Length: 380
Image 1 (cartoon, helix red, strand yellow):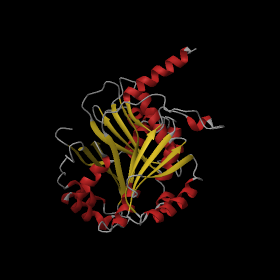
Image 2 (cartoon, rainbow, N blue to C red):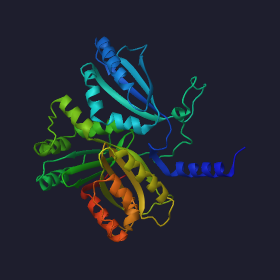
Image 3 (cartoon, helix red, strand yellow):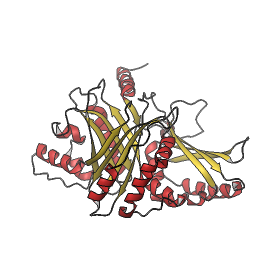
Image 4 (tube, one colour):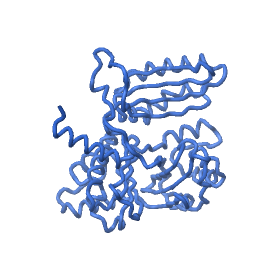
């Protein structure tokens, strides 16, 4: 028999699924699919490297199982699938320095890879004997997206070079938005906070194809070369391995996106930078995600859309605000109304003796990033 609370909970989940287009925080199991193209003749080398990697991954918290498969039609094509208790432990591992070092032996034998991540919604067959039910949670309902994939890159530049870098990054011709018949660049928003740069992009279609398309554009390559001398992490764009390591470390994945119910009003775009305490990045991102979901139910909210990006202890929240940030309620705009949690999870200092509203406004000012450029394709 279904109880009233279960019916209400199910109704809320269905309403949420109509609103939230992306989240890693629903607690359901994660299936990761890695498509691998191995150099001809390097299959044995790849297998040995994988077996070494597999033994290391088995000890990573949250990892459940994995499989390695080889194509029956093309021996150079391999498939690695892995199951995780939920998305956060996988993201904490795959975005960490340990993972960068762990996969290094694969690079000399792999031509190309493509990673896909899925929450488990339904499955057939019984659970494995004595399986931990906590490890076999399924996504309760499908999410309804808006067809847009969101991703960001972040890196730091040498202190003192911020003004020069901002000018370089703002003075470039936008690349052709059409990537192919099914992929299109929709929007690029670039912000700075001190010497940290964040570039957020929105794509319809294939994110990887869009990133490769942008990297090939002469005007983008010229900008990347121009800022090279100012980067804190050295890179050589002519060296594929150097470029790969740089962009791997710069990746800032979107972990949550929410659009307020029925909100189609025009809004201004802002970015907020929440420097997390050591080891608190995922907790902070999840707290912001929970509060943004709750705020999206309030018709008074000025935040029409919010996307949270997180990697290690870097947390960035991209928000579209109706009426502008200066006119918004600081608590709603900040998405973090509890100053105690702010003090616990971030490195931004909080004055507990100050009036709450004034301290929230100050906190918002400290988190606010400087807009460098925000460009949309004409038909986005």
